[in-house]
Amino acid sequence: MATFAYARVSRADMTTANQRLEIETAGYQVDYWYVDEGVSGKVSAVQRPQFVKMLAQIRDGERLVVTKLDRLGRDAQDVGATIKLLAARKIEVVVLQLGKLDLASPAGKLMLTMLAAVAEMERDLLIERTYAGLERAKAEGKTLGRTPKTTPAQQEIMREAYAEGATVSALAREYCVSRATVLSIVKTVVA
Image (cartoon, rainbow, N blue to C red; front, side, top):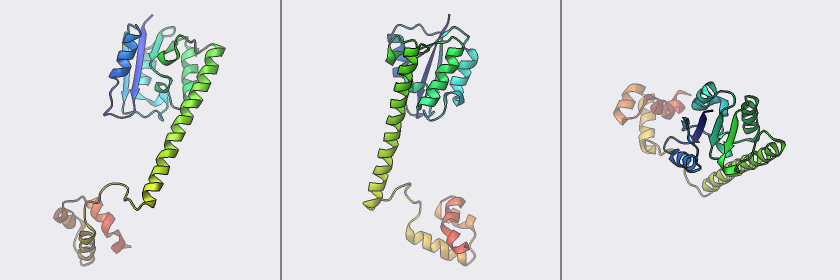
């Protein structure tokens, strides 16, 4: 029976090294490692490239090890569907965070449902706090988003030049910006 390990991080600048170390420290001899980097937990497990690859290789009755439940998904439905899919193939799912709990058993299903619901709630609260922070920043007059590539004075000059017949390409070269940037500035002249 082969042992598979799956790790995931949300951003490409993050690393799965801690997850690998945690699995190895727990004493698992992993035969096959699968890692999705830069893949959000919002993406369902069966849409993640490496998870899909792993599903194609893992055979019925083998073992899958992950460090935490949220590596399998962020919401209760996705985690539940993933566990159900694996349980139907008699694949043992080991979640280090949960200890030695059979997720296919009635007690395991209950624990899984509760933990997945808590993880989903945490994610929803994080989104809520993010939006509240953005609203507060707007109320304080802070400018959100990317820093403009041109000053308001340059934008006005570009609009006037465009109205007088200057081309978008010429303005883009002159101000060292993309054509799309110029178009977004001069669109008020066009309309």
